[in-house]
Image (cartoon, rainbow, N blue to C red; front, top):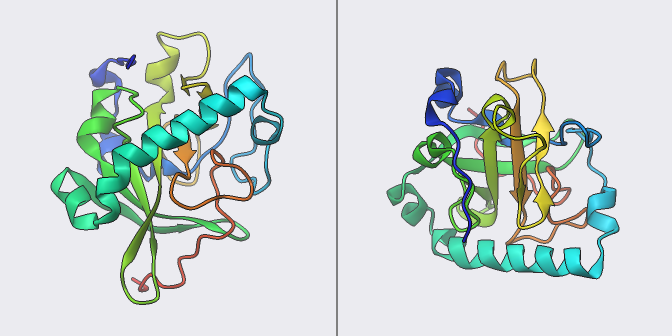
Length: 204
């Protein structure tokens, strides 16, 4: 599989400190029009795929499922270097992203690899457990833009841009959510999932 290498020194200390609360996002940089990072609706990217694009999306979902199945047990994810970084992320109006377990080493590597997501995502269950629902890939925008003329993509799926300033006080970054384990009616690669809830996550 082809991987994309970024200069690790361009990944900021601030990003490491927040461990990538980065996880919430949307859009692409010029020349591609930016999308609304807070949108809960399906985009043209999700609803108007060509047969070839749909085949690529199906392949990406399968690759991510195969790579993350072992992380259904959160203890296995933790042993692999993933750690909860930002509580349970809820949407501005409805829906949520859930619990983001971030692998800082993979973030700092600057490598995009469908088999090694920077983040695995869980939903808290009423019984106190965690259900694996997806994965998230991300790169720092400045690092990417310094060596590329357009936004990153993974197996045909464009990343979304979260611009700065933002509510996290973080530098701009690109992200791609892949809802591999819980079908999203708005699309498999949008940021927010209308059927994910943080209701069972204990208040801090």
